[in-house]
Length: 288
Image 1: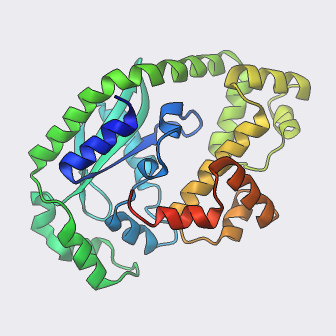
Image 2: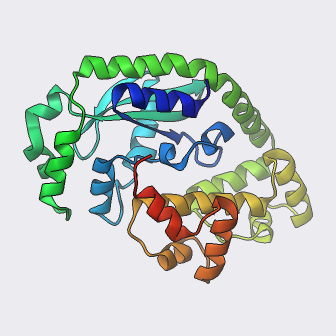
């Protein structure tokens, strides 16, 4: 059984939504990259309403805060998202490395029900949304006990173990190669911390004290693709995040990612995803 088959089965059996976030956005296992887009971000009606009420979406709550916490806890646990709905969080480990985090929800557990819709609205104070639509969506959220939600997470955790063996080894091997070469390790740190989307290969080579020719050969050998292709993939993944999680215009997203011309950005996005940015955004507005 592969990831997508497992996730769709869990969703069909429980009525909950499953999504997965890589622990390191610079080293995304191919088994995650190959998933349908909806599994790589929260796509439920509740999430879309909340994210649509603020230009910054969930402000990194899923991809940053909870992901880091999952790597520290190292076993399934229940949490309530910043908007107050319950999820079970499942850390995915392989060869001792935190590879990804699976989110399963949203559910109205006894804790959520105790606060009720009034508690949700209080947490979302200051955001703009339709009260009637929020009430309708809240009524549709599955009801279950904390203990049952946690059991679902534990079941998924067990099912994932066999799958992650294949995805973990490639990631671990790549990480080991990165650690072996200081220039590549420095380049990855720069990309991860600065989000310098428009940096050229020559500029990066200069920053890590390597010749352009040497850096080019070494990067492809260690990472498995050219520096330019790798940075383009990073930009396109970030573009998908921004299209789904924010209300930024296509032009604003293009400029944020270092593209001076929206048309060029749109063409690159279409080459990689098979659709235009606007088509991608429209498709993400509907459930899986």
